[in-house]
Image 1 (cartoon, helix red, strand yellow):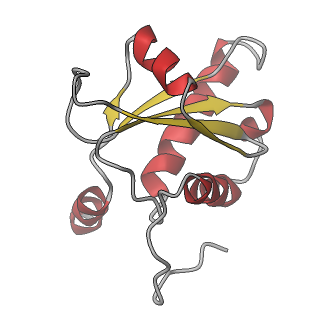
Image 2 (image 1 turned 90 degrees about the vertical axis):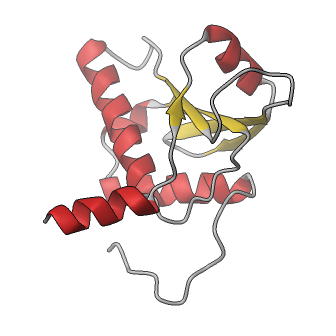
Image 3 (image 1 turned 90 degrees about the horizontal axis):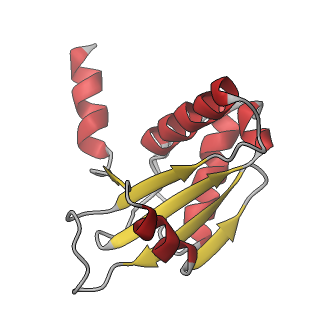
Length: 137
């Protein structure tokens, strides 16, 4: 079991979290991809911007969606879907913000991962299709 966990961590990109409001606002002015469960906003960082190396991701779940318990559950589901999505190849100098919508709370996890991969493909950040891809059905 420890081998599987180590293998999964090695395959996943090293995401860093967005924490500052200014970073979220900059990402808002970038490219967007819309799905039923969330919107993905992406913006390339400039050379002059200070930040961690590698891709950064932030999550926005507003109070319109529900109470704190529901918002935190959606955030946890989106984090897990991002970790489970194998077909995402984030640009190392980009910031991504996932803006959640209400259906993300009840969507099947497999469908949530598929939507996330589709959104990143719309942004042009998907890995080339692999022939030995495992089905998630």
